Image (cartoon, rainbow, N blue to C red; front, side, top):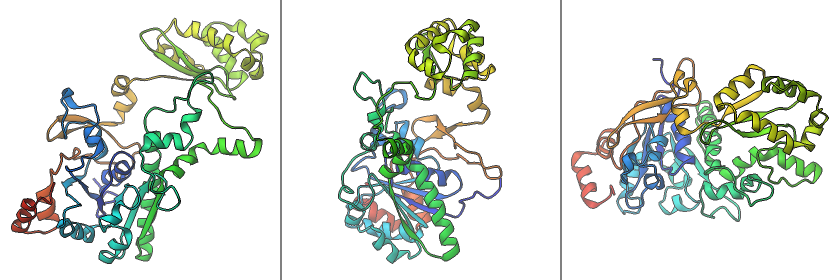
Length: 404
């Protein structure tokens, strides 16, 4: 295999939960050497989050943590210990990038703020990916993606118009911010290659998420409209929704944006007479009679499996897709063909599937070779091997409680 694009890049990873670890994993999957730092005194939140392998709760048994921390070395380090700096100083000197996503002020208390780190490594690149950025009146407000989806406006627009908001599933902003962080890190690496200078990247997950609502912001600016909840419907399409199909809790989404697509849907349904129904003559008419339209479409979809509906409509050039479950995804032939799910051997939970890269580089595809680490799994090889501490020095720090 060709040299990986980030081979030779060294990353000191203090990130935790979702948004930070996922950003760093892009680099790890493409050749960067990453040392992930955490502490058993305050366990990483994803280590205590289900699902757990075989239903057995344990520090090293969650599926979440290893999935976001593939290809990384893992060490445990109590940063509150007075001798922790003996290790962190060498870690920083070794690094090209330091990444963290704590609340602003946390790294400073550990004397690991950017201004501290560049005294050790002047050309260092530091990524700080916090909820609302490093500056401003609300910068130190604590919170996770589960809260940020509401702050960023997603919860308000998710749900049905006659009910309270539901929002997107899970901490949706955790899937957005890592992309911005990874792009910024790549730009910073290129800048350092050209100039020899590092820099501090201040990523506001709040502002990154807001980019995805830009059309709604513009609609408010131009037309004064405040976006609300509209269920599965769209102002620009009808029918547009998730329709029940044959089977237990099986669904298919359908979207029709113009009259030609409507004629194609009618043909697939075996109901060409609906084309001449004045209630559905054009988009405006279909929107006015959308309840009737949804009932007709639903009556048809319930006679077929979701896969049959998708196949018939896609063959006619109508947008349609099965609402897949986790089980469906693991047996999806397209994902299988592209080897998206990769099986790795975890030190405690054994063989386990991990998400692959969402993109394939033609000459240097992602290489998943190491499962996420158990707590402190690589303490000794990292400290004595990579950092060069003697065995006696390592044992002294171990006995003092630094690696907790």
